[in-house]
Amino acid sequence: MTCRTFRLTLLIAAALPALAGCGGQSDTAAVAADVRTQALGVVAAYNAQDAHRAAAYDASDYVGVYHGSPNTIGPAADEAGMKAQMAAAKVDWQLGTGKVTVAKAGDLAVFEAPYTFVIAIPSAPVATERGTWIAIFKRQDGAMKLWRSIASDTAPPKPSGS
Image 1: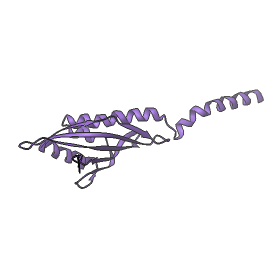
Image 2: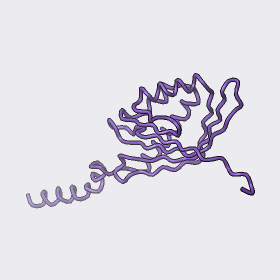
Image 3: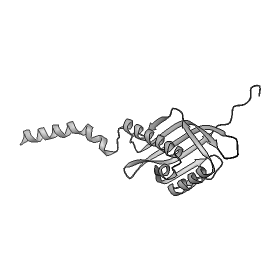
Image 4: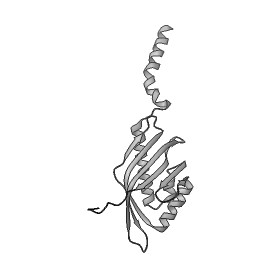
């Protein structure tokens, strides 16, 4: 009996490092890859003028913070806002190289990338906006969802000699 107990104890001790990942630890590289894919999916859906698909990435308690407009609260408001934008203008949203930072537990991740919007409004000159997009993803219902979206445009460069 003692030999069986000893072998069982060794088996459990050997399995503990693998089991530790189940209780809150995470494979942060896998989470980072998933978040990057989702962030690029949001952009692809937006560029395809598919507000419903873009808002499907949102967490139930989503908040969008964008310069010059009130905060967007919830996926339904996000979808409605995108539909209004898409009806008024064609936007080509491009991201520069982004980076993902994942919390040790894997339940929160931040995607950060420079962006360029090329905005075409009928009967107006094409405008270009550049800035930084910060997308915070939170684990919700077993999946990483877009929890906070913050876009901050940067000021145009100052003319030389200013």
